[in-house]
Length: 390
Image (tube, rainbow, N blue to C red; front, side, top):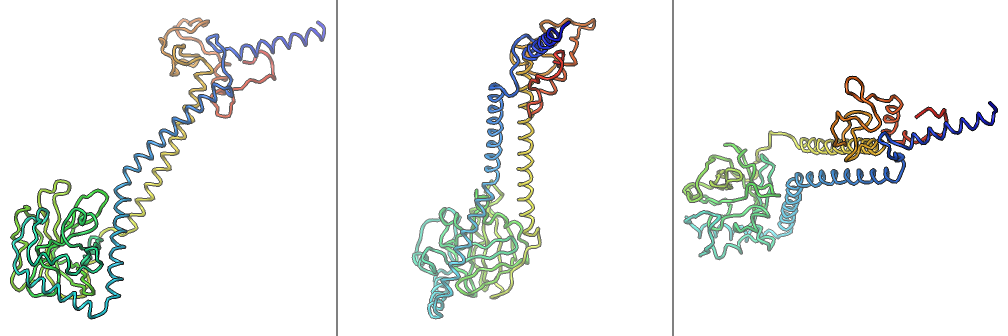
């Protein structure tokens, strides 16, 4: 045989090898890994992964909203307290003495009021008609603020108990005494529990007898020691009445959490000014940072899982397209890969079953299957080598 004939035979074998590579096991054309179909499949997988990430971010946002909103609202309350302190610091001693005297006179004129459910009381009579003008330090209704380090709460105290007031901080019940150092009086400060996006009196249940909190009116830091904790019906106001010779402030909120059928009363007895309140003994603030780091790690892990899923989906799409494993096609040479809807036991076209009824696997096809699943296009055609390689 001449060299020319030998070269012609070699070229013919190479041509047959490329033809066999271009045809899948089912006889149809096998798309190249880098073909337009492969690019479209990769684009669809990318959009699906982006959709998964978007759903995760939406869920994370819903989960984090109450915490973030609570933080923002608490910062607003802290800003109001800072503004209150700044206004008080700029008042002259005569102005502060006048406001303090008016508050004490209001308590004396109020006497022993007839109380009702503080969340349903609306009528204002003398001297309550003068109430909104008493201790209106900032011109916006803020009369004082309550400081309870035991439950990490420092909230402004506004006149009245309207819905608007109780979403900004706490409210003072108009028909109770204003916190002063009078000998006989009983003031009631109320706040919500379980309001979405707000942390007000949610943790008031953690207060114990003997704990000390403060109510700061002008530059007076009135200290109160808890001596009674009760759960009552809204209509039961016996424990909110003044007691002769006793100076009380009661912190009131709804309970149980989310049901709000009763009222929780935490009463404190006046023990003087400037006595340090009870400090918290629970988890330190760094626990919050630990939770935030845990959430960040969870988000990173979710992102890694999403990327891995995307890579697997791309590999599966390439395998299905390269070997005709799409909808309506046979199960393929790998025997059992997903994507085919035919009977797994049915032989593919052009394949003869063995004695055991199984389709023999072509080692060369198995090599191509592994190569085609590589993300770097390992299944692309190669013009080099012997024509018998497939």
